[in-house]
Image (cartoon, rainbow, N blue to C red; front, side, top):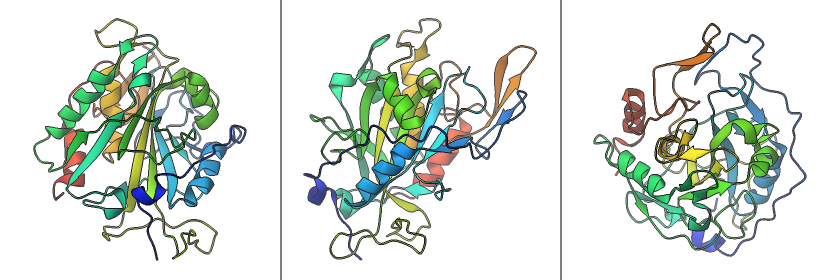
Length: 322
């Protein structure tokens, strides 16, 4: 089989379809009781027709969009999807970066990230790039992990999902603050009201000598696993923040702390999933989580440092990274 790499894809153009959202796709996990409990084992999920179309187009370039993971506001309804899949057959959240992956033009055991500065400011909350940068300083400081993420400049619109035109320049691409309309388009109706941020994971897929995707017996693309660790090989990540919501970098009440939200989303870029059970107390109307973690699926105030589950997961992913 043949693998396409970033340099070979640099001039490829992706045309996104603006009229293919499947807003009627049923939730995979039904939540019928308002006294609900949610957690990493029972994430409510949906299939997006928009992402399915992006997936088909991306396959021609040797990659596929696997899924999107959403961070919700604390008042999101219990049936709001937190994982949005490109197809109804892709049930796994098993992906991982490959160190020194030649397809990413990687020559060392690091990852690159970039911020699209023109969109790195919230309409309500102001400039956010410094907060984005601070989160990678935090993740890099986890001592058990040998992974280091370094920043590169991004000068072109890096959104593969919205058809930015070029293969993203970094491994991790912070597109910035996107109008809420696009959250509804890509993730489904209501996303603009309750989704704070979303991380899209793209994986490398198997292609033949002519660059044509190899399909399985069901007609699905097949993810690569060149290091044979049992996990799909991550190609790149794309991160959005919802500009329809109000943010703060100064602790203003009633707003979302940008650094806390970014630390969560960037945890997804490092292959961390959602941790903890989230339960609603009907007497107080408040959410309770167990255990508390940066990677809880709902944002519950300011949390700018990884806690026990966060650290353990990062160590499990990258403790032997080299």
